[in-house]
Length: 358
Ligand code: ADP
Ligand code: MG
Image (cartoon, rainbow, N blue to C red; front, top):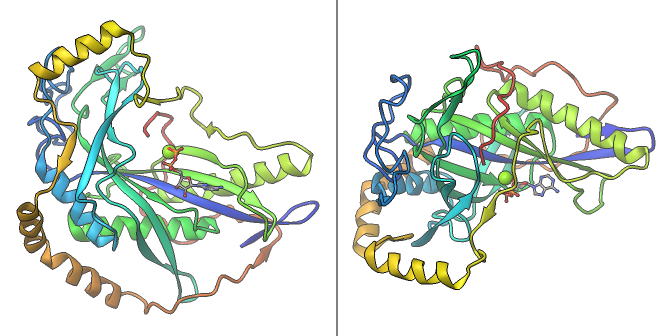
């Protein structure tokens, strides 16, 4: 879809990062429960509270859920994946870092077929899926002068599913998120409940004149309703067009999340000799494994157990509109519509929550 500006037509380019809470009784690196709505701080192990010396141990069921999702996204399953520390300072992150996968995620490239108005379909590329820990939650409404922290969510497993910048309109982005939600629900790997925060998306938006290289993107964090996807994208695209047409430049940034702090992976941390020495000593004491290896027998075992997934996926596609691949035909509109186009879910119209989640 093309948007009309003052000086030319503009094409929107959109990519989504979807955060899906993994359906699992226990957290990603601890045995604590994950039930929604439990008494604050009643589901917190020493690992989740980041007590010194605690050893995170991977929950293999979460890895299996990620593999199952990867198969449902027709994606490459990486036999070897690696966990890294992504450093942040936040009151609801007692470790001071999030354990996440960075350069070697558990799932690689895949694709999703989306259905568009008028019976057309389009293929949207998946860049990767990785596993990571969720953070706790700051509670600002419990006391007039203080904020409290609930660590029940601390350490809960999330899948971050990153799309390629293949989406060209707010409608396509909504269709993608809706399709992603139904795939996750079919597979039973995420309950898809956006109201509970089990599914939320960061939306990357840029604009360009048709045929030009990709423009600079801005990221709208933590969108937790499909309806808001529409409003956020159209608002952001309009803003960027106005900036560029009046001679300005788009600065890459996270909009609507002013409190965000840049995160740093510890690929090349400043390491004075003392720290290196201490690290070596600690390594010999703790059998900490940051690498997750699936052995051949585990993999074939997993494959047998996941056999149903591919046939389920095929059935699902058959049930839906036939995969007639659409050619992208730019359509011109003079102004963005402000009404959601019928894809909204009941009660699914909350404003975005301004929180950091990556
Ligand atoms: P980061 O961690 O910096 O957000 P990711 O690789 O996790 O980077 O996500 C980048 C997201 O931005 C992807 O969903 C991708 O499709 C999207 N994206 C990349 N380039 C553009 C662009 N020029 N315009 C819009 N979206 C983009
Ligand atoms: Mg991101």
